[in-house]
Length: 98
Image (tube, rainbow, N blue to C red):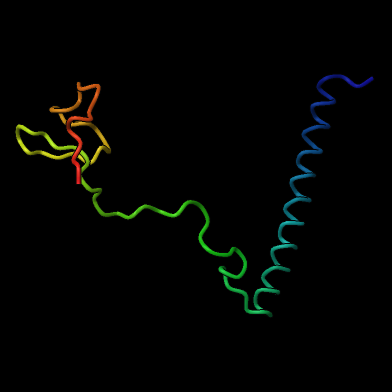
């Protein structure tokens, strides 16, 4: 029966062999893909499609949702609440009605 150290050495040897084989296969596949891209003229959009992920929000400012009746200051409801509304639990009285 093999000792623990012998088994660890075999594992390390197999891992290095696996990494070498993976690298060879990776390079072969990449070369094949590059040839096909060059021959057929694929673009990144052809391969990967349109942008992935969620559509981004507009970068513009959000419209005001709350107004301080005393000062007339407004807040969109996003980000950190201003001092005039931060401790208020029910903010309905500050809502801006269109």
